[in-house]
Length: 247
Ligand SMILES: [Zn+2]
Image (cartoon, rainbow, N blue to C red; front, side, top):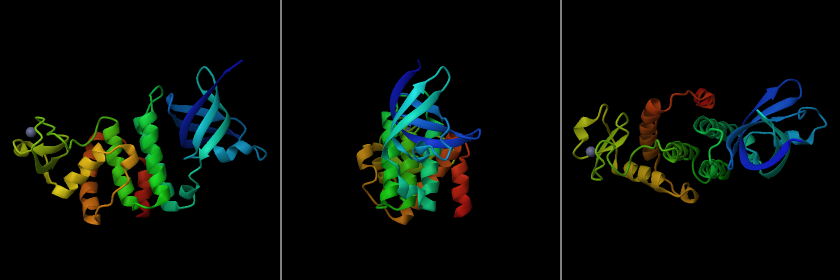
């Protein structure tokens, strides 16, 4: 007899295996990122196929094998259908999932990671906050949640909290008044952009998408984030390349 486990999670990616099977990458609260195989789901009579899609959130009942999990059933809590019907939202949602897959591993305790993904997919779904802002907030927050965030409360060089208006990606964040000359590639950051950055880094996940800022601030912080990510993320995300080709 194989052991059965019930894990709570969100499907990050799916792939085809053989003629009838599907491979799922699921971020689970209890065991981090796992891979599960859904056997026979691509046969026309199988009802499980609609639950084996990206963004599906729920309780996954799995058989635990020696090397992999096999999916038995899914109790779906949320499909995020709104994201699959809208090309733009689908692409950004896929990017959020791909980024999460990059940062997570099997065995992680993933409650915060899962919550971050959930509130972000939900913000895309609801559409109350413009998509470029949802994307920016997610990008900044995921780095922070994984302990690699843009330093915005204390100088990354000396820890001093009397910050200047100079950001330096190579140093790791916003420099203090004593360290402004030590930046490798110093960039000006406006007061409002710094305040927004601090809000995102400091916010509880439930409040993360409760604000709006001007397009100018979004552009300024997007440039800062990209410079930072170029140094600290050593992966080209496929979904991001698709987004870039569409815009
Ligand atoms: Zn300093």
